[in-house]
Amino acid sequence: MISRNRIPTHPGQILLEEFLIPMEILQTQLAAHLEVPVQRINELVKGKRGVTPATAWLLAAAFQTTPEFWMNLQTQHDLARNRPHKILQEIRRASFRAPTRARAASSASKGKGAVRAPAKGAPTVGEGPRRSPRSRRTSRPRSPHPTPRAA
Image (tube, rainbow, N blue to C red; front, side):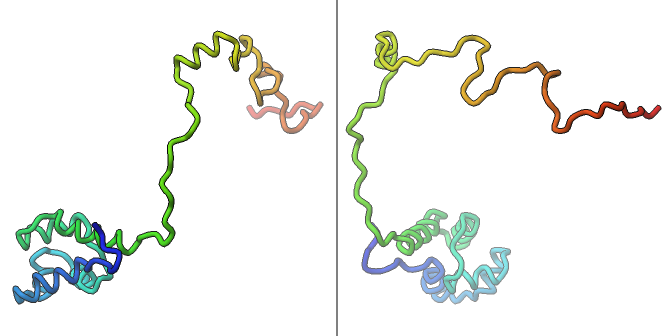
């Protein structure tokens, strides 16, 4: 469970205090070993960057831990930092019953709320009268004088 009194320690601080300092490893040495930019390790240690899944795999391999260890540290930190200030009440089950297929079919057969399909070929809501493609109107009227065609 996440403590409400404090934010869990950032994974970068744990990396520094529990791994780098006791093992006397420099950030540059770790970056070279992992084949990542030094800036990535430095920003992680300073708490400006989070642990990504790719970084978790690299750290797990380097320090004989699991990627889940690093991802859990990051998740706990992120959840605590982004805890909502307003507590919402629990949502409750709705008091009405949604229609099931059996009830919908029985009510339709009794004539209660049954919706009939429009007649075949009849326009549906939002459609205008049906026209053949030739009867469509153009945006501007045609000129009474035919235009010459290029040969």
